[in-house]
Structures are given as structure tokens and as C-alpha cells.
Length: 187
Image 1 (tube, rainbow, N blue to C red):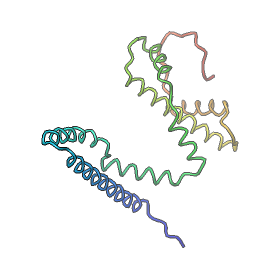
Image 2 (cartoon, rainbow, N blue to C red; image 1 turned 90 degrees about the vertical axis):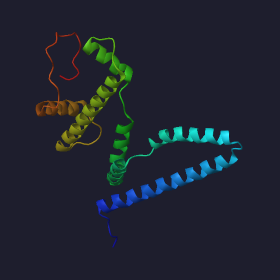
Image 3 (cartoon, rainbow, N blue to C red; image 1 turned 120 degrees about the horizontal axis):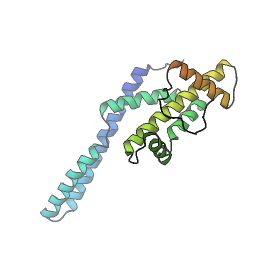
Image 4 (tube, one colour; image 1 turned 30 degrees about the vertical axis):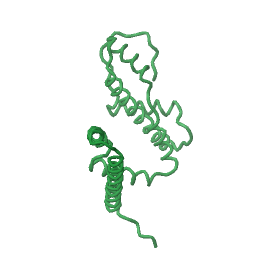
């Protein structure tokens, strides 16, 4: 009988493996630096190379994740390993999907009335929109499960999902803005 590991034990073992990998990478780097220093013929060339390495070292330190990041990464790997094939496919699709920044910028310009929209603002709104769409799709899947339906999500599922999210208070209310001649997305 196969003994299954406790998720906590598995994450600790993965942390140790990551630390070992990082230390071996640092050792390899030190060996490369030592070899390059031996190849430098003059003291001036060695000093110049050491200065460049110190500057590059600051940049390279940002590449290595912190300890807390390693723990989160290990936990995420444990969760992903338990996904079914269908769940993994959906997860990958969500990770790859994004809203076009140009479209979001036009939308923000029309809402705010300002011509100057910051890139960080666009990214934040794109992220919020992506989260909302994810919530909408997740609720639509629940609706499908309740109705005992399978296959792709249909517009009726999206409408019902939107209605439920609105009842839960997860859809923001419309502010008092003069009506525009824009067709409604959901009836």
C-alpha cells in the first residue's frame, strides 16, 4: 500500500530542494567568476571586471525569490498536482487570457472623460475585469451543475450567473450618470 505524504511535509521537502538548487547555482557562479578573474591579465582589468560583477550582483539578487515566495510556490505546486486534466486545461486558459490594454484604455477614457490614463491604472482595471469574468464563469458552471447540464457555457447560464452575482452584491451599482445610447450587454 502506498503511503501518501502530508501536504505540509511535502512543502517542507520542496523548500529544502529549492534551497539546495539555489546554493549549487551560487557555487557555479562563483567558479565562473574565479575562472574569468584568472583570465584577466592586468590588475586594472581584474578590478574593472570585479566592479561589473558587483553591479550585476545587485540585479541578479532580484532574480532569486524570497523564502516566503518559495513556500507559496511549493503550496501552489501541491494544489496544481491535484488538478484533473480538465481543471488544468481551464487553469492554463485563465492564466494565458488577458484583456487588450488598448480596449481597456478606450473604455477608461470614456468613463472618466480624461485623455490621460496611467498604465498602472489600465493594468489594475484589466485585473479586476479578469477576476469578475472568472467569478461570472465559475458561477455559470455552478448554475449548469444545478440544472444538470453539461457542455459549453451558454448565454442563459451567463445571464443567470450575472443575476446571482448581482443579488450577492458582487456587481457594482450604476452611478447616477446621464443615460447613453449604448445597448445593454445583459437584459
